[in-house]
Length: 209
Image 1 (tube, rainbow, N blue to C red):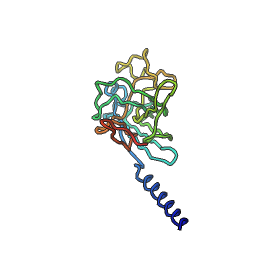
Image 2: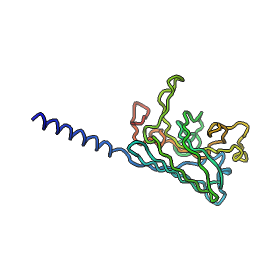
Image 3: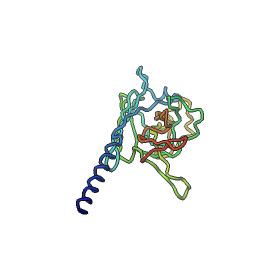
Image 4: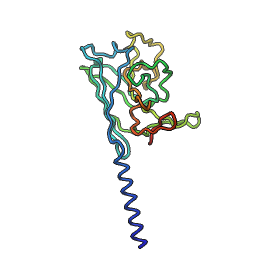
């Protein structure tokens, strides 16, 4: 009797784990918004606004992110990051209270072709669990639920008012240009789109890993 009871408990546990796994969102798709300040430097000037669409597929050990962008300035280099904070509000407009992007995680280089299209695929931890920390520096585990890319060459944004003598650190040489396109927070939770399983704690939302 004890043997059969043990087997029944094991079967129930495995079933519950399977249901929990399949209950997770297996794929999410979202867009990036072009930064208004550099729109003229980012655009291909082909009559269309720059667009970038991201699809993230959940995997067993890690996830796959696929980015496709169009109507970008041809033959231009960018650098893709996941970041803690967006400089946009939930409606895609600039956040007047924005201070900084917070923790930033370098993910990939990105380059538009002669027709202004760009594609890149990365494979890493992304959905609900992407984070960094530094116990020595006092940084607790911090999520980077936003995705954006920056001009690799500061000179590519000078026509839009960017000062190349004060570059941003958003490339391998830490001498990049400004943000080009980025995600925006969810209107209800305030979290970035890489969080697909939010949970409210008091007046704030966290992401269930």
